[in-house]
Image 1: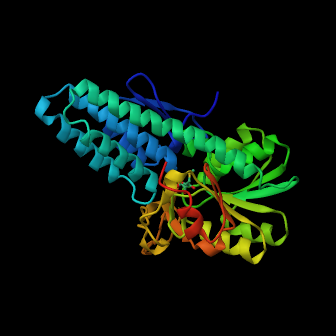
Image 2 (image 1 turned 90 degrees about the horizontal axis):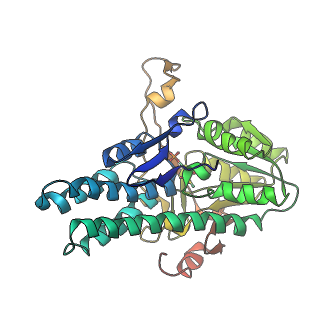
Amino acid sequence: MDIEAVRWADGRLRFLDQTLLPHEERYVETADHHVVAEAIRALRIRGAPAIGVAAAYAVVLAALQSSRGPATAFFPSIRRAIDLLASTRPTAVNLFTALDRMRSALDRSTALPASSVVEVLLEHADSIFRHDVESCRLIGELGAALIVPGSAVLTHCNAGALATAGAGTALSIITTAARQGKILRVFVDETRPLLQGARLTAWELARARIPVTLITDSTAATVLRKGMVTAVIVGADRITATGDVANKVGTYPLALMASVHDVPFYVAAPSTTLDRATETGAEIVIEERDPEEVTHLAGTRVAAQGVDVFSPAFDVTPNELVTAIVTELGVLRPPYTGSIRRLGPPQ
Ligand code: MRU
């Protein structure tokens, strides 16, 4: 069965609880938007596009829930739900793009009866879902054209089916190129501290029967220096108007290493990850995580007592280190200010 990170199922949202992978494949179904908000906060649903899709459907759940309550509370409670969902994680712009679209649809629907409002919101959420599925497919096709036969690629974190409504972004390129017989091996950074590489990306690739080698994050420089990797491909949580890229912490050092070793560094993301209103990476709010994720391993403390922790979830790669950005609308090349502007308004 295909991986389905998030899917609408008959008035409920169905999602795969990613905190349990790779040991357990447990799908959760809920009609409660609070459960979706908690799932995003706790990284049960994660990855920029998947968060956006889940949040859009959670607004529909909120509308369904409030349609059973007093009429005067209907619109205010949906707006409260949107605010709650927007507070779950700060960095991935897809969350805010999706919620802004749902809020605008709601604002245009205030004269409609509750049942029609629910329908309108569901149409928008479905459209966000379908757009993401199609974007993943196109990113895979466009990006695979950049991969030369006999490649070994390196990726970080998880930008696969688990992180989107479709086949993924960076992993869509990798799986498409692998189907074309161009990829010999994929190196996967384990991705400290939450191990999205080891737990999720390695699981997806092994499931797709693509040869995968797991490395610690600090081994990346060695494989690059030894010429074991011909391209680095990662996803993104937010790309600014100048092409600076926020992605899982550890992406920036990879870009630096790739540049030193003259290896192309590709970023794959749908146009919904572009944040044209933000000029540079310095303006992006970077989520900070709970220190326990660093001081503890599987619930056991491994760090010395009495130490402080700094644990940003993401870092920013400056645009000059990015060889190309693969979107569903085309492959962008530097200078990105121009290539992003030429893409036109958001889709
Ligand atoms: O903290 P996470 O697991 O949500 O971080 C995810 C990433 O950094 C991904 O690379 C990014 O969202 C792109 S997913 C297509």
